[in-house]
Amino acid sequence: MTFTVFGTGAVGAYYGARLARAGHTVHFLVRSDYEVIKEKGLTVLSPEGDIYLDKPSVFNSPEAVPPSDVILIALKTTGNKNLKEQLKPLIARNTAILILQNGMGMEEEMASWFPSNPVLGGMCFICSRKKAPALIEHLDKGAVTLGCGDERDRALRDSLYSLFNEAGIETSVVENLREARWRKLLWNIPYNGLSVVLNSDTRELMTTEGARELVEGLMEEVLAGAAACRCPIEREAMEKMLHYTEIMTPYEPSMKQDYMAGRPMEIEYMYEIPLAQALENGCDMKKVRMLKDQLHFIQNRNLQKH
Amino acid sequence: MTFTVFGTGAVGAYYGARLARAGHTVHFLVRSDYEVIKEKGLTVLSPEGDIYLDKPSVFNSPEAVPPSDVILIALKTTGNKNLKEQLKPLIARNTAILILQNGMGMEEEMASWFPSNPVLGGMCFICSRKKAPALIEHLDKGAVTLGCGDERDRALRDSLYSLFNEAGIETSVVENLREARWRKLLWNIPYNGLSVVLNSDTRELMTTEGARELVEGLMEEVLAGAAACRCPIEREAMEKMLHYTEIMTPYEPSMKQDYMAGRPMEIEYMYEIPLAQALENGCDMKKVRMLKDQLHFIQNRNLQKH
Image (tube, rainbow over all chains, first blue to last red; front, side):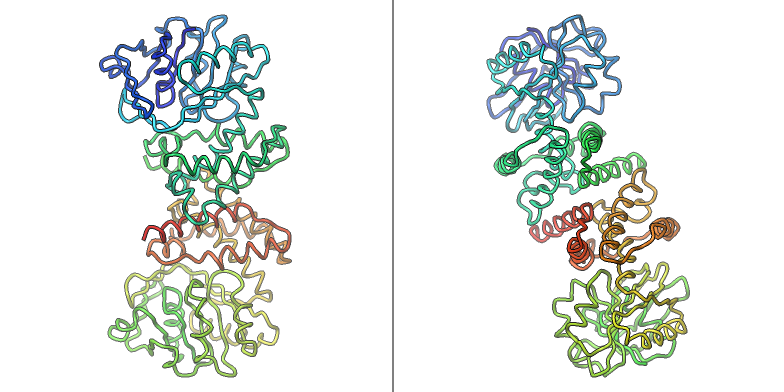
């Protein structure tokens, strides 16, 4: 199988580099760092062994990328507004689309844009960041959970599962993609938003007295929202996630990284869509809503200042 | 009537100075700035005309203060832990206690400590701050709303009402002190907490796109909490308060001032007690609870750092 990484940031570059190192053809579509990667190659620093791609197949426009079997969507959801038009040159009759973004509702949107193409979702549990142009630092984790919205894409999901694992990406599959998205939000909703609003990181959010109430209060609402959307998640998942966060390397979640770098934050797909879906099903996640409003405030204030 | 100001900060010094300027005997109990006030006097800068007390009656221990008819409690509620013991030397048989603090539950607590003394509450709508030791800056407003928990104290409340107005303090009375405390919280709960958590002031909280949802979401919960506690407040009060905040001089609320000065924040009386009272009456103010948890996080993180 051949791959195109759409959005070569901290997530896309990591998975693309792993696949390329395993011998697969991987094209990288790059916006801002095209010249640097072209010149210097692509480096991924990792505790599991650094990866250096000397001459990656890199492009700066969708039209230039050769056809491939799978498009990995790894740009931020804040770029989804123009995604449909940008993807068109890349999507042939059987091109599969694997969405590695955070949040909710991306697969449904993608399926509405390209109704005859396979659309899969991948939840990435990874701590990574861009240190400099063409230089990605992988800090911890890296597992991917694969799911599909349409039963007909199961065989493809299972092929990718095997291929990813063989390429050194710890991968699992889920039967219910929407439930898996809610599970991911159980972490993303509290830690991303609070790290921005409270100018904090996972270590402070786990060790400061009283922080547990804050994180748990949000997680409990996400559990209620998921249950209202007929994706019930067992309560122990919350305890596991808290424990997992306690033992992982202290981390600035992606939204905090975006905020600090002056990039827009992924408020729509990570907060607004889950809030709307839960509300449609009779569950108002009030604390989540307030956190969303706080993030909007912070983002809008910065926009008004600059 | 003679007065003792217990806690000569931005609020106590302002009202004490107004009363002293009107010719009343006012003793000031001062903790940290005693020497400076003794030497330089007390200055209140005000758009309504500065007040300078050349030789105020100032004391640095409760035991030293001469008897007076009314004790104005104007220290922060964060100092209430030791208040009972500190007040004892000041409280004679008929000494009245007027609580000018922010929050809820102070009058009930005071009445439990001194059950035979008149206890009144005063809601101060004032923007003021301490600029330097012995130097208070009055920025805007200054009205006081007086109420009493016990019907027998009405005559005293009305006497103070007249005396305050004659001293140039715009004063009104209310029949239901608990309702008036809830009304004050309608402002205090959103603006104090958000100004700290979002590192903001009233201007940003009124003019940033999306901020209105944030403030209103909290205010709506306070209305619900008040109603649950049998202190229903008409919805128009919320609109009035938003408008009032829009037109007032931009202001860092008292909790923001405390936070920036490294003082503890008034979380207990301004958030915890109202939250507990509403919950006892079946109303969980979830957004308010999250704001309280965020304030605790910020306070505890700072304590752990220092």
